[in-house]
Image (cartoon, rainbow, N blue to C red; front, side, top):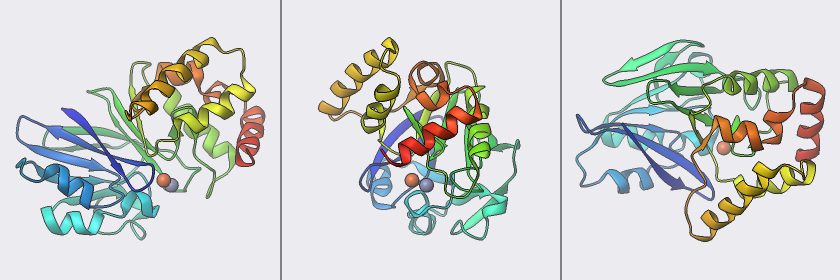
Amino acid sequence: MRVEIIPCLQDNYSYLIIDDSNNSACVVDPSEASPIINFLENKSINLKYILNTHHHFDHIGGNKDLKKKFGSSVVGFKKDSNRIPGIDILLEDNQIWEAENFKAKIIHVPGHTSGHICFHFFQEKLVFTGDTLFSLGCGRIFEGTYEEMFDSLNKIKSLPEETKIYCGHEYTLNNSKFCIRHDSKNLNLKKKIESLKKQIEDGIPTIPSTIKNELECNIFLRANNLESFSKLRDLKDNF
Ligand code: ZN
Ligand code: FE
């Protein structure tokens, strides 16, 4: 199983999880269809499943066209079935979704939206976090409470440290400016900022991160109580 990062729109990432043993693939959060089609064309890889972390347009925009082109099945959270276009397979919290050689645990992470989920490919130690956890940041709270978002991040925090994090946007450099403002003595963070500046300069994605690295550097994961988390979230909204 390998992951290909497909940049979409302004700063979105879609991800292809490719199983080379039988030339099949899943796509996570296709913002738009054409970059996915361009990548897959002439590679004879079948796009079997479309996995959506949440219903926002920049995560589902390619569903319909991809479904039409490849006959893929759309996989998403049951309670969001009325707002995920083309949904076929309905998921619940804590469920193990299994199809072909793909196997992921579904983690319900309300806060950014009420129906946001993460896909945890626990065998490969990968997690797709959509707009809930970013590298050095977290999503805005649109449909939930601070407490829900804090609890959701705690669920992600508890995954094995070596788990790779694939999030929905390339926001890392911008996020780092907020982190360093409020955590100026963090040497791990300083080190990370140096390397991600270089990555951006070279046009390389700063994704994936890891749980270990985010625990060291991401100020929202370092907040150890609801009060300080909420304060940081407010400050970030006005940053
Ligand atoms: Zn979103
Ligand atoms: Fe988004």
